[in-house]
Image (cartoon, rainbow, N blue to C red; front, side, top):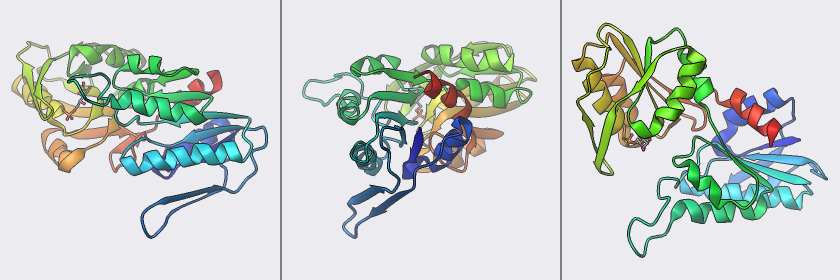
Length: 283
Ligand code: R5P
């Protein structure tokens, strides 16, 4: 197997290659003056398994992903496993209004054209994986999050009931109790957390979510926990998008903010590589 690292996923690709004891293919990836992407794989892949690692976020990385898959096929890869650490567009996963595109499904259809198997991580709605007609796995980085938080907090919380199964995975590894808050979203940028009595007074609490985008969900959770007397609170997630200055706002609201390396930012201090290596070996 050779690992083909897209520009959005360099750090994670290196960690995965080390974990798999697989070489990284040499590549040339650049942008033309007009912004178009150029991709070349410099090593022959004749019959090898090519593990293409690249996010489908933001938009320009989607084109690079398609080109890396195409180059891997043309370089003679025997099998292409496409690993999308952060599956962008996953939140538009159904028709909410007539006439819309269902972005998650459109992306899935195009990604699998040049893939023999697909792995992604903590996708917004795991049911989206059913859109793939090839072997496809929704891996979870929650074991890595749990490992990282072990000893740092006394309790894990998910901001809503829907995410509680993810948090359970982290809590099991960390050996911690877990619970959930009651979140409702009134529009894409406004959330409310319903009052819920929790036993957090004097405790160190970790709030864990799959994605932090605007930070609105996490900040509401922080207000709630401070009001109930939590002694320390940290925010942890798989995918730290941190749109529009969210990281600054989160750092004012929380004692610490941690994210995985599925998206590379200054907060990505947790590596998803170890759980991913296991999934890659299985697929
Ligand atoms: C929603 O269902 C997700 O699990 C996250 O809670 C959400 O995407 C976070 O978005 P934001 O940071 O904008 O509140």
